[in-house]
Image (cartoon, rainbow, N blue to C red; front, top):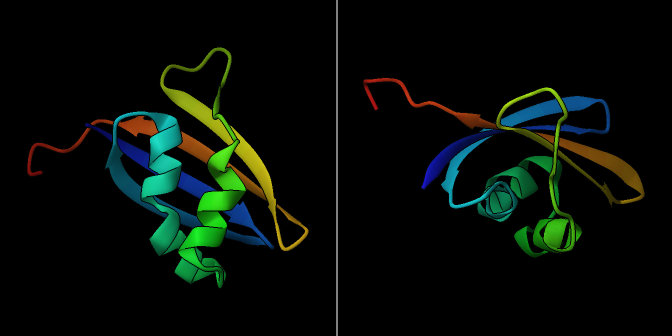
Length: 89
């Protein structure tokens, strides 16, 4: 399992989460509960929002992806970065 940092941009706010997942797409699902609570949406709603979204790798960047979707008719942008854990972890 890889460590991913997810940076959500939604309704004028920026929200950051980290999780362990097998793939960048799985990291969206893994973070659904915690980010859903923050954004005021149920986990199932967040999972549904990103169910069919497949993160796209960012050209010229290693281990960085982006996914977008709509939540309550507002754009959600998620930047996903594969993160190297610190030695303390």
